Image (cartoon, rainbow, N blue to C red; front, side):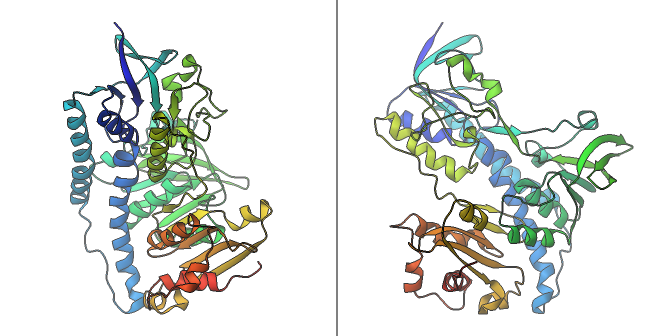
Length: 455
């Protein structure tokens, strides 16, 4: 028996924004979620990882305080308390969301994997349901590489690593991106013997080279790296796992109690089977949408990680607003010119817009500003020798094209630049007209713009 809805929403991360707005409008809502309520950010992404990296920040800050005349170290690490704090937040919020949705008479919650069976028709257990409006925010999952012996030996991913009750003595992390940087920071800081193995000879290849190098140097005090190496085979060996590595030059072996796979993500759309509803996908399996976030099928929208770009919760939240407005007759268009992000490693890195090489490749006539933390009063006080601000500006218009901040408080410091980039013509000149509290790290930003030059 078919049951029609005003709207079907697939995914309870940022999809909840649409569900709540739909309910308040009086629409009858069907919501699908096959995992923990709250989606990736709450359960296996931004929130739990920051609980962990904050612990690591405290440890590294204490150890590095010797540079300012205070010798400290972490006496003990209470992993049980760390785990209980994480669980209280993530599991607590997830269960709270679930209870709230289940009690809502205007929302039917389907704890199943949604699957299209026809145009705008989805199988829900033994029922088929349909709606003229469908919103897809079904996210992504870890991409598991095809490595001989990996499945048999066993591995962890971001989907289950936060459930561990005790940390391993040693850990091999596969991958060299954001997840690898943050997990290596946490586990290395709490005393786990960590080895990062990345195919790319560059660590954090999507960041400005000097920022990536700073993080590599910072983590190397706690973490071993094999960059430019692939994993040929994994074998269970007693109570650990043996990884056979190969590069262009040589072979190596690494033993670790656990393996954590951080080798990127893949689309969940193979589970949803959107082609049965005529929805177009790109060659990577992500949705093709217009600037209104509508697919090629009228009334079906997709946003968030399901698009395969700018996979950050703050971006998904902004996109959910665009989708909701268009569902209600507005002609709202998505604007992703200014999407900031941060890597919460050691040191922290925050970035927005174009990098220097990208700006040059696109033909911009640019000026570059670069200023180190330690040449300001506050930066010197912090003994931050690796911190810096780098900005990219279009020469003629003075519009900010991009910025990277590396060091303490990077993610907070970047936000002021983000505000300027979306205001007026995006010029940096308001900074030059402003007074900067002295001494603060904000002075590093001002001095970076004050030193613009051809580079």
